[in-house]
Image (cartoon, rainbow, N blue to C red; front, side, top):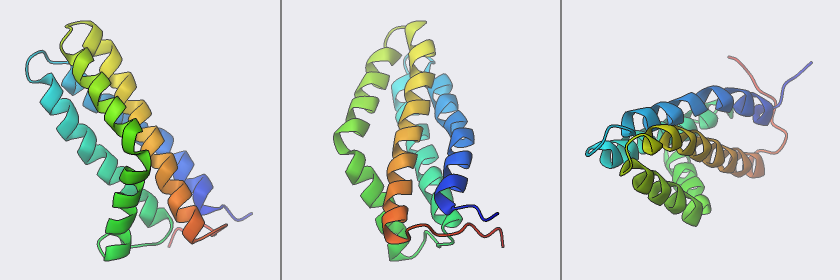
Length: 132
């Protein structure tokens, strides 16, 4: 039975949410936490969009892939800003930041991944996943 790219991407997205949670754990270190959280979360999110592009059998380096990353981030717009502000504020409170930032990181990765899936699904509707 064939598997759609969107289903494969969502299966993998659950695993990639761990990267967002890890960014939150790293960001839970007082003082340097906010900067570390933003930097590592941005890297994880770029990797998520790149992997979703690969599921759709696209190379994310050409303009189309770079455009996909930009489109996903733009589509999230205010949501991403709220995630980052929330993570920053939580990072100022020892203990609370260590609990809240991993959750914010995981949710931010999930949200951006869903937007990227929707973006690619609009370009390539019902595309069958190929493991080649």
